[in-house]
Every structure is written in structure tokens, then in C-alpha cells.
Amino acid sequence: MSDLSGKVAIVTGAGRGLGREEAMQLASQGARVVINDINLPDAEEAAQQTVEEIKAAGGEAIAVFGDCANSEDSDKLFKTALDTYGDINIMVNNAGFCRDKTIFGMSDDEFDSVVRVHLRGHFVNMRNATKYWREKAKGGDPVYGRLVSTSSEAAIYGSAGQPNYASAKAGIVAMTMGAAQLMIKYGITCNVIMPRARTAMTDAGQTAAMFAAPEDGFDVFNPENVAPLVGYLASPEAGHISGEVMIVWGGEITVLQRPTLGQSFNSSNGGKWQLDDMHNKMSEYFDENHMPVWGGFSVPPG
Image 1 (tube, rainbow, N blue to C red):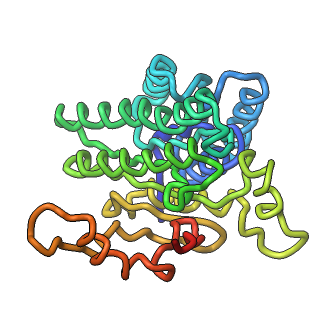
Image 2: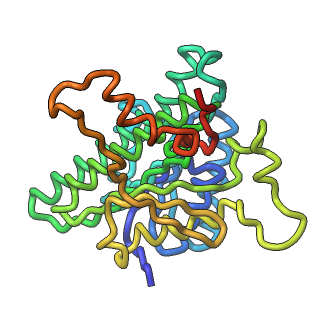
């Protein structure tokens, strides 16, 4: 079941946390894994340790270091994967970091750096993967392609203290949905996961206590719990699943519904709105019982 023998997977940010568990999962299913992480000493050490653990378990893996959002580094990553293993079948975009602040206190750099790593980091690797698969398919060669993007529930709820992170994660969903529409004709799937897991990004600040490991019992926020979904979406059995967004944590997976239209209003004269007409039509609907902010709080009346 879910055999990936002979397949080649790239996982970004795979030295530690979610990326490490996802790389280990794919390797356990038989995939040859390219571990990508930033070229900093602690990250390189962690990535190399992941490689050694995969090899010790009988798998195949290499580490390639570089900036996931740098086009040249991404080109090098793909070239190394192809030179080493001869193909690329699975692209898991996972790398990221946080610099949390409210919008009125956030600097340009704090916004740009997070959006760059998360959104551009997905883009450059997604571009290389989809281009490779498309050209291979147009050349008449068999293609096996699985793209897994990593978003967050911050994209849904807004995350008031993370305007940079939430925006990037929302963009990842939109970009992946577009790729899914383009690539399905080639038999290539593109999906998004929204993990709830304990990582370096949750170890500090207000979230640390919420994600802390329990003293005993099932650890619902262990990143190991997320990895099987990545393994499944990468598998032949999931070839009919594409363009989906899934929240995953503990022993639960929730598939997000597509956005739907809500209440509609029409002007009384059938043409351009007049302000008093607009107020009369909309005020009853937007009373204090119908004004929740997405994060779950209510806008005070008046």
C-alpha cells in the first residue's frame, strides 16, 4: 500500500520539524529523498542527520543546501536531484519561519522576509517542478508528479499577530489551486496541507504552551502525526485527489469546503445604489448577531 519505490522526492526545510518527519515518511515508503535546507551550520547539521537516519533505515537520501526562495538555489536543487537520481516525482514545499507582530508594529523587512520564504519559496520550486513534469509529458514520457504545499489555518482566520505569515499562507493556497487546474491534464496532483504541529515556529511566544507535549498519552501536536497525509497524497492511491486543502493534526484530517457565496442584496431601483437604500437593505443583516470577524470575535454594534 502506498509504495513509492523508485520515486524521487524533494522536501524543503527537511532538516527538522515537519519537513524531517515528511522526509522520513516518504523514505519509509521507498522514495529516494532529497533533503533541502538553508545553508547555515545548524540547519546543515540537522539535514545531514536526517540523511543518515534514512540511510540507517535502509533508504536513500542526499542533502542539498540553499535558500528555498532563491531561483538559482532552486535550479541547483533540481539539477542535483536529477543528476543523482534521474527523475523528480514528488515536491513537498515545507520550509518557512515566523516574525510575528501586529500590522501597526511590523516593519517592511518583517513582512517581506516572511512572505519571501513562504510564498516565493513555494513559487520557485513549484515552477521548477511543474515545468519539468509538463516538458516530460509533452515529450511523450510517462510522468508521475505529486505536489504538496504547506499552508496554515492562519490563511482562513487572518491571524491578527501574523499579517505577513497569514498573507503568504493564503497566497500558497491560491497558487496551488491554480497549479492543480493546469496540471491535472497531465495526471499530476497538487494539494495543500494545513498542519497543526509542534515545530520551531510554535516553540516561542503565546503558542508554546498550547503546543507543548503532554506528560503522558497521545501527543496530538507531534509532527509525526502530519507525515502520513503527505505520504498518502504522494502515493499512487491518491492519484484522483487534487486541488484539495486539508487540515491535519493528531488523528484527524478535515477537508476544507470550497468558498461559497453568501447573502446578496439588490438596489431598489435596479441600478446604482443610493446610500439610504443600501443601509435599509443591509443594516438588518449586519446587526450585532451577524457581524463575526473571521477569527471568532464580534464587532461591537454601532
